Length: 481
Image (cartoon, rainbow, N blue to C red; front, side):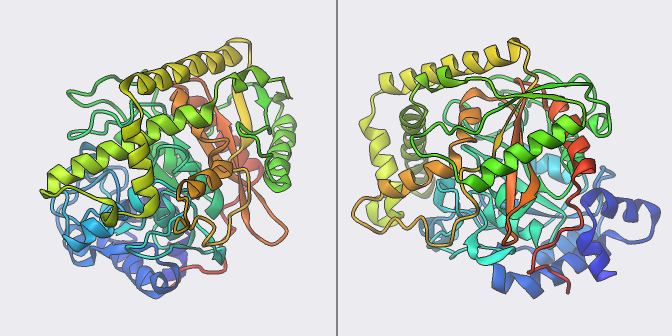
Protein backbone atom coordinates (compact mmCIF):
# COMPACT_ATOMS: atom_id res chain seq x y z
CA UNK A 1 0.00 0.00 0.00
CA UNK A 2 2.84 2.40 0.83
CA UNK A 3 4.47 2.04 -2.59
CA UNK A 4 1.09 2.25 -4.33
CA UNK A 5 0.28 5.52 -2.54
CA UNK A 6 3.62 7.02 -3.50
CA UNK A 7 2.83 6.43 -7.17
CA UNK A 8 -0.77 7.68 -7.14
CA UNK A 9 -1.58 11.21 -8.21
CA UNK A 10 -3.72 13.46 -6.01
CA UNK A 11 -6.92 12.69 -7.91
CA UNK A 12 -6.45 8.97 -7.31
CA UNK A 13 -5.59 9.50 -3.64
CA UNK A 14 -8.71 11.62 -3.16
CA UNK A 15 -10.79 8.85 -4.73
CA UNK A 16 -9.47 6.40 -2.11
CA UNK A 17 -10.87 8.68 0.59
CA UNK A 18 -14.20 9.14 -1.20
CA UNK A 19 -14.60 5.39 -1.67
CA UNK A 20 -13.67 4.62 1.94
CA UNK A 21 -10.61 2.56 0.94
CA UNK A 22 -8.36 4.93 2.90
CA UNK A 23 -8.86 7.67 5.47
CA UNK A 24 -7.24 11.11 5.34
CA UNK A 25 -5.08 10.03 8.27
CA UNK A 26 -3.91 6.99 6.29
CA UNK A 27 -2.76 9.20 3.42
CA UNK A 28 -1.10 11.74 5.70
CA UNK A 29 0.69 9.16 7.85
CA UNK A 30 2.04 7.45 4.74
CA UNK A 31 3.25 10.76 3.29
CA UNK A 32 4.97 11.67 6.56
CA UNK A 33 6.74 8.30 6.55
CA UNK A 34 7.94 8.89 2.98
CA UNK A 35 9.27 12.35 3.87
CA UNK A 36 11.09 11.00 6.92
CA UNK A 37 12.63 8.20 4.86
CA UNK A 38 13.89 10.41 2.03
CA UNK A 39 14.23 14.04 3.04
CA UNK A 40 17.64 13.60 4.64
CA UNK A 41 19.13 12.92 1.21
CA UNK A 42 16.92 15.32 -0.71
CA UNK A 43 16.65 18.46 1.45
CA UNK A 44 13.21 19.33 0.08
CA UNK A 45 11.09 19.84 3.23
CA UNK A 46 12.51 22.44 5.64
CA UNK A 47 9.56 22.97 7.99
CA UNK A 48 7.86 19.70 8.96
CA UNK A 49 4.30 20.35 10.14
CA UNK A 50 3.48 16.73 10.87
CA UNK A 51 1.59 17.05 14.15
CA UNK A 52 -0.46 19.92 12.79
CA UNK A 53 -1.23 17.97 9.63
CA UNK A 54 -2.26 14.84 11.52
CA UNK A 55 -4.59 16.88 13.72
CA UNK A 56 -6.23 18.33 10.62
CA UNK A 57 -6.48 14.90 8.96
CA UNK A 58 -8.19 13.45 12.03
CA UNK A 59 -10.63 16.36 12.29
CA UNK A 60 -13.51 17.63 10.17
CA UNK A 61 -12.16 18.29 6.70
CA UNK A 62 -13.89 20.36 4.02
CA UNK A 63 -15.54 18.21 1.38
CA UNK A 64 -13.39 19.55 -1.44
CA UNK A 65 -12.05 17.71 -4.48
CA UNK A 66 -8.84 16.74 -2.65
CA UNK A 67 -10.26 15.86 0.76
CA UNK A 68 -7.52 14.26 2.86
CA UNK A 69 -4.70 14.53 0.31
CA UNK A 70 -1.32 15.51 1.84
CA UNK A 71 0.20 18.74 0.52
CA UNK A 72 3.28 20.91 0.91
CA UNK A 73 3.53 24.70 0.77
CA UNK A 74 6.55 26.42 -0.69
CA UNK A 75 8.19 28.64 1.95
CA UNK A 76 7.46 31.70 -0.17
CA UNK A 77 4.04 33.00 -1.12
CA UNK A 78 0.95 31.16 0.11
CA UNK A 79 0.99 30.66 3.89
CA UNK A 80 -1.11 30.01 6.97
CA UNK A 81 -0.94 32.38 9.94
CA UNK A 82 1.60 31.33 12.55
CA UNK A 83 3.53 28.96 10.33
CA UNK A 84 7.24 29.60 9.63
CA UNK A 85 7.96 31.82 6.64
CA UNK A 86 11.65 32.33 5.95
CA UNK A 87 11.78 32.81 2.15
CA UNK A 88 15.20 31.18 2.05
CA UNK A 89 16.64 33.91 4.30
CA UNK A 90 18.92 33.29 7.26
CA UNK A 91 17.75 36.69 8.52
CA UNK A 92 14.16 35.45 8.89
CA UNK A 93 15.25 32.03 10.10
CA UNK A 94 17.25 33.59 12.95
CA UNK A 95 14.16 35.56 14.01
CA UNK A 96 11.80 32.58 13.69
CA UNK A 97 9.61 34.76 11.48
CA UNK A 98 6.00 33.60 11.14
CA UNK A 99 3.31 34.39 8.59
CA UNK A 100 1.11 37.12 10.07
CA UNK A 101 -2.14 35.86 8.48
CA UNK A 102 -3.61 33.32 6.09
CA UNK A 103 -3.26 34.15 2.43
CA UNK A 104 -6.40 33.72 0.36
CA UNK A 105 -4.68 30.99 -1.66
CA UNK A 106 -3.79 29.00 1.46
CA UNK A 107 -7.44 29.23 2.52
CA UNK A 108 -8.48 27.90 -0.88
CA UNK A 109 -6.03 25.02 -0.59
CA UNK A 110 -7.65 24.18 2.75
CA UNK A 111 -11.16 24.47 1.30
CA UNK A 112 -10.15 22.02 -1.43
CA UNK A 113 -9.57 19.47 1.35
CA UNK A 114 -5.77 19.49 1.19
CA UNK A 115 -3.81 18.75 4.38
CA UNK A 116 -0.59 20.76 4.65
CA UNK A 117 2.16 18.70 6.30
CA UNK A 118 5.21 20.88 5.67
CA UNK A 119 6.90 23.69 3.81
CA UNK A 120 9.53 23.34 1.12
CA UNK A 121 12.93 24.83 0.43
CA UNK A 122 13.43 27.86 -1.82
CA UNK A 123 16.40 30.05 -2.80
CA UNK A 124 16.67 33.33 -0.93
CA UNK A 125 13.75 35.55 -2.01
CA UNK A 126 13.06 33.14 -4.89
CA UNK A 127 15.73 34.81 -7.02
CA UNK A 128 17.63 31.94 -8.66
CA UNK A 129 16.64 28.98 -10.87
CA UNK A 130 18.23 26.65 -8.33
CA UNK A 131 17.37 25.89 -4.69
CA UNK A 132 20.57 26.28 -2.67
CA UNK A 133 19.94 28.88 0.07
CA UNK A 134 22.63 29.32 2.70
CA UNK A 135 19.91 29.21 5.34
CA UNK A 136 18.89 25.62 4.59
CA UNK A 137 21.37 24.16 2.13
CA UNK A 138 20.68 22.61 -1.26
CA UNK A 139 17.67 20.69 -2.44
CA UNK A 140 18.94 17.85 -4.60
CA UNK A 141 17.39 16.52 -7.76
CA UNK A 142 16.03 12.98 -7.18
CA UNK A 143 17.01 12.05 -10.75
CA UNK A 144 20.67 12.88 -9.97
CA UNK A 145 21.62 14.02 -6.47
CA UNK A 146 24.50 16.08 -7.83
CA UNK A 147 22.22 18.26 -9.91
CA UNK A 148 19.86 21.13 -9.24
CA UNK A 149 16.15 20.56 -8.77
CA UNK A 150 15.58 24.02 -10.23
CA UNK A 151 14.21 27.11 -8.59
CA UNK A 152 12.67 28.84 -7.07
CA UNK A 153 10.12 26.07 -6.40
CA UNK A 154 12.86 23.44 -6.30
CA UNK A 155 11.94 22.06 -2.88
CA UNK A 156 8.36 21.44 -3.99
CA UNK A 157 9.43 19.88 -7.29
CA UNK A 158 11.95 17.54 -5.69
CA UNK A 159 9.39 16.43 -3.09
CA UNK A 160 6.78 15.63 -5.75
CA UNK A 161 9.20 13.91 -8.11
CA UNK A 162 10.47 11.75 -5.24
CA UNK A 163 6.93 10.68 -4.33
CA UNK A 164 6.66 12.42 -0.95
CA UNK A 165 3.37 14.06 -1.94
CA UNK A 166 1.42 13.91 -5.22
CA UNK A 167 1.64 17.65 -5.85
CA UNK A 168 2.82 20.77 -4.04
CA UNK A 169 2.42 24.54 -4.05
CA UNK A 170 4.71 26.52 -6.34
CA UNK A 171 4.90 30.03 -7.76
CA UNK A 172 6.56 31.67 -10.75
CA UNK A 173 8.16 35.07 -11.31
CA UNK A 174 10.49 34.20 -14.18
CA UNK A 175 10.09 30.46 -14.57
CA UNK A 176 9.93 29.26 -10.97
CA UNK A 177 7.12 26.76 -11.60
CA UNK A 178 8.22 25.65 -15.06
CA UNK A 179 11.99 25.39 -14.48
CA UNK A 180 11.75 23.02 -11.46
CA UNK A 181 9.03 21.04 -13.24
CA UNK A 182 11.34 20.58 -16.21
CA UNK A 183 14.35 19.66 -14.06
CA UNK A 184 12.36 17.11 -12.06
CA UNK A 185 10.14 15.54 -14.73
CA UNK A 186 6.83 17.14 -13.68
CA UNK A 187 3.91 19.15 -14.99
CA UNK A 188 4.25 22.86 -14.27
CA UNK A 189 1.53 25.33 -15.30
CA UNK A 190 2.08 29.06 -14.92
CA UNK A 191 -1.44 30.50 -15.09
CA UNK A 192 -2.40 33.78 -16.69
CA UNK A 193 -1.51 36.91 -14.76
CA UNK A 194 -3.87 37.35 -11.78
CA UNK A 195 -5.69 34.12 -12.52
CA UNK A 196 -5.19 33.36 -8.82
CA UNK A 197 -5.38 36.04 -6.16
CA UNK A 198 -2.21 36.94 -4.23
CA UNK A 199 -4.09 38.70 -1.40
CA UNK A 200 -4.68 39.87 1.19
CA UNK A 201 -1.30 41.51 1.82
CA UNK A 202 -0.25 41.51 -1.83
CA UNK A 203 -2.04 43.00 -4.81
CA UNK A 204 0.49 42.00 -7.41
CA UNK A 205 4.26 41.66 -7.30
CA UNK A 206 6.53 43.70 -9.57
CA UNK A 207 3.49 44.88 -11.56
CA UNK A 208 2.30 41.35 -12.21
CA UNK A 209 5.40 39.26 -12.91
CA UNK A 210 4.47 36.54 -10.43
CA UNK A 211 1.68 33.98 -10.18
CA UNK A 212 0.83 30.93 -8.05
CA UNK A 213 -0.24 27.31 -8.49
CA UNK A 214 1.64 23.99 -8.19
CA UNK A 215 3.96 21.35 -9.60
CA UNK A 216 2.30 17.99 -10.17
CA UNK A 217 2.69 14.56 -11.73
CA UNK A 218 -0.45 14.66 -13.90
CA UNK A 219 -2.34 17.11 -16.06
CA UNK A 220 -5.64 16.21 -14.40
CA UNK A 221 -4.27 17.15 -10.96
CA UNK A 222 -3.11 20.52 -12.27
CA UNK A 223 -6.49 21.16 -13.90
CA UNK A 224 -8.45 20.16 -10.80
CA UNK A 225 -6.34 22.30 -8.47
CA UNK A 226 -6.58 25.27 -10.82
CA UNK A 227 -10.35 24.82 -10.84
CA UNK A 228 -10.41 24.72 -7.03
CA UNK A 229 -8.34 27.85 -6.39
CA UNK A 230 -8.69 30.22 -9.35
CA UNK A 231 -10.55 33.47 -9.30
CA UNK A 232 -10.22 36.98 -7.86
CA UNK A 233 -10.74 38.17 -4.31
CA UNK A 234 -12.13 41.47 -3.06
CA UNK A 235 -9.64 44.27 -3.55
CA UNK A 236 -7.50 42.62 -6.25
CA UNK A 237 -6.05 45.31 -8.54
CA UNK A 238 -7.23 43.53 -11.71
CA UNK A 239 -8.42 40.06 -12.74
CA UNK A 240 -7.81 37.51 -15.48
CA UNK A 241 -10.53 36.76 -18.04
CA UNK A 242 -12.93 34.14 -16.65
CA UNK A 243 -12.67 30.59 -18.01
CA UNK A 244 -15.22 29.39 -20.55
CA UNK A 245 -16.06 26.29 -18.48
CA UNK A 246 -14.55 24.29 -15.58
CA UNK A 247 -10.89 23.47 -16.14
CA UNK A 248 -11.52 19.85 -15.21
CA UNK A 249 -13.68 19.53 -18.34
CA UNK A 250 -10.72 20.44 -20.56
CA UNK A 251 -8.78 17.27 -19.69
CA UNK A 252 -9.69 14.79 -22.42
CA UNK A 253 -11.54 17.38 -24.51
CA UNK A 254 -10.68 17.52 -28.21
CA UNK A 255 -8.47 20.55 -28.89
CA UNK A 256 -9.20 20.37 -32.59
CA UNK A 257 -6.48 20.83 -35.19
CA UNK A 258 -4.18 23.54 -33.91
CA UNK A 259 -1.52 25.65 -35.56
CA UNK A 260 1.65 25.70 -33.45
CA UNK A 261 4.67 28.00 -33.78
CA UNK A 262 7.96 26.31 -32.88
CA UNK A 263 10.82 28.49 -31.62
CA UNK A 264 14.15 27.22 -30.29
CA UNK A 265 16.04 30.52 -30.44
CA UNK A 266 16.75 32.09 -27.06
CA UNK A 267 16.05 35.67 -26.02
CA UNK A 268 19.73 36.09 -25.06
CA UNK A 269 23.03 36.00 -26.96
CA UNK A 270 23.79 32.44 -25.80
CA UNK A 271 22.33 29.53 -27.79
CA UNK A 272 20.38 26.77 -26.10
CA UNK A 273 22.00 23.40 -25.43
CA UNK A 274 21.21 20.78 -28.12
CA UNK A 275 19.33 18.56 -25.65
CA UNK A 276 16.39 20.91 -24.89
CA UNK A 277 16.28 21.91 -28.56
CA UNK A 278 15.94 18.22 -29.47
CA UNK A 279 13.20 17.89 -26.86
CA UNK A 280 11.19 20.72 -28.40
CA UNK A 281 11.64 19.34 -31.91
CA UNK A 282 10.61 15.90 -30.70
CA UNK A 283 7.46 17.40 -29.18
CA UNK A 284 6.76 19.09 -32.52
CA UNK A 285 6.84 15.70 -34.22
CA UNK A 286 4.43 14.27 -31.65
CA UNK A 287 2.06 17.20 -32.16
CA UNK A 288 2.17 16.67 -35.91
CA UNK A 289 1.40 13.00 -35.35
CA UNK A 290 -1.67 14.08 -33.38
CA UNK A 291 -2.88 16.08 -36.35
CA UNK A 292 -1.66 19.56 -35.44
CA UNK A 293 0.25 21.82 -37.84
CA UNK A 294 3.69 22.91 -36.60
CA UNK A 295 5.59 25.72 -38.31
CA UNK A 296 8.81 27.54 -37.47
CA UNK A 297 8.14 31.22 -38.23
CA UNK A 298 10.72 34.00 -38.06
CA UNK A 299 10.21 35.65 -34.65
CA UNK A 300 13.22 37.96 -34.88
CA UNK A 301 11.12 41.08 -34.29
CA UNK A 302 10.46 39.86 -30.73
CA UNK A 303 14.15 40.40 -30.02
CA UNK A 304 13.90 44.12 -30.75
CA UNK A 305 13.15 44.60 -27.04
CA UNK A 306 15.99 43.93 -24.61
CA UNK A 307 14.14 41.46 -22.38
CA UNK A 308 17.17 40.92 -20.13
CA UNK A 309 17.69 44.56 -19.17
CA UNK A 310 14.00 45.45 -18.91
CA UNK A 311 13.29 42.34 -16.84
CA UNK A 312 16.27 43.12 -14.59
CA UNK A 313 14.93 46.62 -13.89
CA UNK A 314 11.60 45.19 -12.68
CA UNK A 315 13.17 42.26 -10.81
CA UNK A 316 15.76 44.39 -9.02
CA UNK A 317 13.08 46.88 -7.97
CA UNK A 318 11.15 43.96 -6.50
CA UNK A 319 14.09 42.86 -4.37
CA UNK A 320 14.63 46.40 -3.06
CA UNK A 321 10.95 46.63 -2.18
CA UNK A 322 10.76 43.28 -0.40
CA UNK A 323 13.84 44.01 1.74
CA UNK A 324 12.29 47.33 2.76
CA UNK A 325 9.00 45.60 3.55
CA UNK A 326 10.67 42.85 5.58
CA UNK A 327 12.64 45.49 7.46
CA UNK A 328 9.39 47.15 8.48
CA UNK A 329 7.85 43.78 9.42
CA UNK A 330 10.79 42.84 11.66
CA UNK A 331 11.58 46.30 13.02
CA UNK A 332 15.11 46.38 11.60
CA UNK A 333 16.84 47.94 8.63
CA UNK A 334 18.16 45.05 6.52
CA UNK A 335 21.78 45.54 5.49
CA UNK A 336 24.30 43.73 3.28
CA UNK A 337 25.34 41.32 6.05
CA UNK A 338 21.74 40.13 6.49
CA UNK A 339 21.30 38.65 3.02
CA UNK A 340 23.22 36.73 0.39
CA UNK A 341 25.50 38.77 -1.91
CA UNK A 342 23.24 38.47 -4.96
CA UNK A 343 20.16 39.56 -3.01
CA UNK A 344 21.95 42.70 -1.87
CA UNK A 345 23.41 43.43 -5.32
CA UNK A 346 19.96 43.20 -6.89
CA UNK A 347 18.37 45.36 -4.21
CA UNK A 348 21.06 48.01 -4.65
CA UNK A 349 20.52 47.92 -8.42
CA UNK A 350 16.82 48.37 -7.81
CA UNK A 351 17.48 51.43 -5.69
CA UNK A 352 19.67 52.96 -8.40
CA UNK A 353 17.02 52.71 -11.09
CA UNK A 354 14.62 55.63 -11.29
CA UNK A 355 10.84 55.40 -11.20
CA UNK A 356 10.88 56.44 -14.84
CA UNK A 357 13.17 53.55 -15.76
CA UNK A 358 10.83 51.16 -13.98
CA UNK A 359 7.77 52.41 -15.86
CA UNK A 360 9.72 52.30 -19.12
CA UNK A 361 10.52 48.63 -18.48
CA UNK A 362 6.86 47.88 -17.77
CA UNK A 363 5.95 49.71 -20.98
CA UNK A 364 8.47 47.70 -22.98
CA UNK A 365 6.92 44.50 -21.70
CA UNK A 366 3.48 45.76 -22.65
CA UNK A 367 4.77 46.27 -26.19
CA UNK A 368 6.18 42.74 -26.10
CA UNK A 369 2.77 41.48 -24.97
CA UNK A 370 1.21 43.03 -28.06
CA UNK A 371 3.89 41.41 -30.25
CA UNK A 372 3.11 37.97 -28.87
CA UNK A 373 -0.60 38.67 -29.17
CA UNK A 374 0.09 39.46 -32.82
CA UNK A 375 1.58 36.00 -33.30
CA UNK A 376 -1.63 34.45 -32.04
CA UNK A 377 -3.77 36.88 -34.03
CA UNK A 378 -1.88 35.81 -37.17
CA UNK A 379 -3.28 32.32 -36.73
CA UNK A 380 -0.98 30.47 -34.33
CA UNK A 381 -2.90 28.89 -31.46
CA UNK A 382 0.16 27.93 -29.39
CA UNK A 383 3.86 28.60 -29.14
CA UNK A 384 6.22 25.64 -28.55
CA UNK A 385 9.70 26.08 -27.03
CA UNK A 386 12.15 24.28 -24.78
CA UNK A 387 11.51 25.08 -21.12
CA UNK A 388 15.16 25.71 -20.21
CA UNK A 389 18.18 26.43 -22.34
CA UNK A 390 20.18 23.66 -20.66
CA UNK A 391 19.69 20.29 -18.92
CA UNK A 392 19.48 20.33 -15.10
CA UNK A 393 22.78 21.98 -14.09
CA UNK A 394 25.13 20.67 -11.39
CA UNK A 395 24.68 21.98 -7.86
CA UNK A 396 27.06 24.85 -7.21
CA UNK A 397 26.58 26.36 -10.67
CA UNK A 398 25.11 29.56 -9.17
CA UNK A 399 27.69 30.50 -6.52
CA UNK A 400 27.46 34.24 -5.77
CA UNK A 401 30.43 34.42 -3.39
CA UNK A 402 32.82 35.86 -5.97
CA UNK A 403 33.71 39.50 -6.55
CA UNK A 404 30.72 40.13 -8.84
CA UNK A 405 27.48 38.59 -7.49
CA UNK A 406 25.58 39.83 -10.54
CA UNK A 407 27.59 37.38 -12.64
CA UNK A 408 25.57 34.66 -10.90
CA UNK A 409 22.36 36.29 -12.09
CA UNK A 410 23.78 36.42 -15.61
CA UNK A 411 24.63 32.70 -15.33
CA UNK A 412 20.92 32.13 -14.72
CA UNK A 413 19.85 33.73 -18.01
CA UNK A 414 20.18 30.45 -19.93
CA UNK A 415 17.70 28.83 -17.53
CA UNK A 416 15.08 31.55 -17.87
CA UNK A 417 15.64 32.43 -21.52
CA UNK A 418 12.40 30.72 -22.64
CA UNK A 419 10.28 31.24 -19.53
CA UNK A 420 10.73 34.83 -18.33
CA UNK A 421 9.14 36.41 -21.42
CA UNK A 422 5.76 35.01 -20.42
CA UNK A 423 5.94 36.46 -16.95
CA UNK A 424 6.47 39.75 -18.73
CA UNK A 425 3.48 39.21 -21.07
CA UNK A 426 1.26 37.50 -18.48
CA UNK A 427 0.41 34.60 -20.79
CA UNK A 428 -0.24 31.08 -19.44
CA UNK A 429 2.52 28.56 -20.13
CA UNK A 430 3.01 24.91 -19.20
CA UNK A 431 6.12 22.72 -18.97
CA UNK A 432 5.65 19.04 -19.73
CA UNK A 433 8.12 16.15 -19.17
CA UNK A 434 8.23 14.85 -22.73
CA UNK A 435 11.93 14.01 -23.08
CA UNK A 436 14.73 12.34 -21.14
CA UNK A 437 18.42 12.66 -21.94
CA UNK A 438 20.66 9.66 -22.56
CA UNK A 439 21.94 9.89 -18.99
CA UNK A 440 18.41 9.78 -17.59
CA UNK A 441 17.72 13.45 -16.89
CA UNK A 442 14.26 14.89 -17.57
CA UNK A 443 14.09 17.68 -20.14
CA UNK A 444 10.98 19.86 -20.24
CA UNK A 445 9.08 21.31 -23.18
CA UNK A 446 7.02 24.51 -22.90
CA UNK A 447 3.71 25.35 -24.53
CA UNK A 448 2.37 28.93 -24.41
CA UNK A 449 -1.19 30.08 -25.10
CA UNK A 450 -2.85 33.49 -25.51
CA UNK A 451 -3.75 35.36 -22.33
CA UNK A 452 -6.58 33.63 -20.49
CA UNK A 453 -6.42 30.38 -22.50
CA UNK A 454 -5.33 27.85 -19.89
CA UNK A 455 -8.15 25.70 -21.29
CA UNK A 456 -6.26 25.27 -24.56
CA UNK A 457 -3.04 24.34 -22.75
CA UNK A 458 -4.80 21.74 -20.62
CA UNK A 459 -6.48 20.10 -23.62
CA UNK A 460 -3.22 19.75 -25.53
CA UNK A 461 -1.21 18.79 -22.44
CA UNK A 462 -3.65 15.96 -21.70
CA UNK A 463 -3.40 14.83 -25.31
CA UNK A 464 0.42 14.77 -25.09
CA UNK A 465 0.25 12.96 -21.74
CA UNK A 466 -1.61 10.13 -23.48
CA UNK A 467 0.69 10.10 -26.49
CA UNK A 468 3.96 10.24 -24.52
CA UNK A 469 3.04 9.00 -21.02
CA UNK A 470 5.36 9.81 -18.15
CA UNK A 471 3.44 8.50 -15.11
CA UNK A 472 5.48 5.29 -14.83
CA UNK A 473 8.84 7.12 -14.83
CA UNK A 474 10.27 7.52 -11.34
CA UNK A 475 13.69 8.82 -10.31
CA UNK A 476 16.41 6.71 -8.67
CA UNK A 477 15.59 8.38 -5.34
CA UNK A 478 11.90 7.60 -4.81
CA UNK A 479 10.22 7.77 -1.44
CA UNK A 480 8.78 4.39 -0.51
CA UNK A 481 8.80 4.13 3.28
